[in-house]
Length: 131
Image 1 (tube, rainbow, N blue to C red):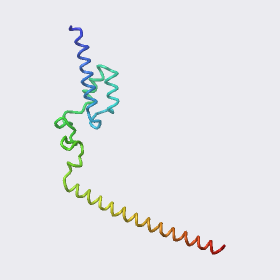
Image 2: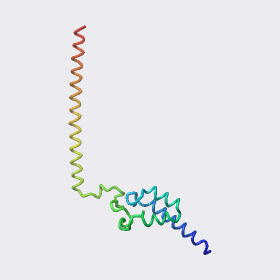
Image 3: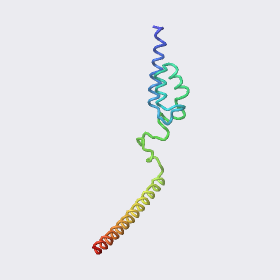
Image 4: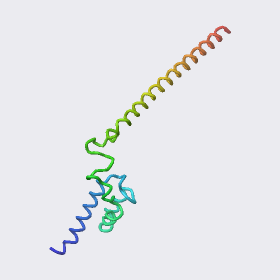
């Protein structure tokens, strides 16, 4: 029974580190990209998980209550709901300005199209007059 203990510990460490790496947000992973850590953990059974725990796993201070600091569980991952109201008012003002600018550009395009059509009609009339 005792001779299986190293295998059980290695397998437990591998599974723990693999699950931990998969569940960790990609932005919090240190030193390598998340995919490289997964490959390292899988292909180097003892060294990979230990390296993940030492050099890849985010420090405990990066987590707040088990979640990513900028994502709240009550907002389902939509940080715009966590912003203060003045940010929403500023966003509404920006949206209104964008709407006005879009309307202005649309009017300018319509006017340019009307002028082009008028010019085209004049040229067609001149050509008919020459015939």
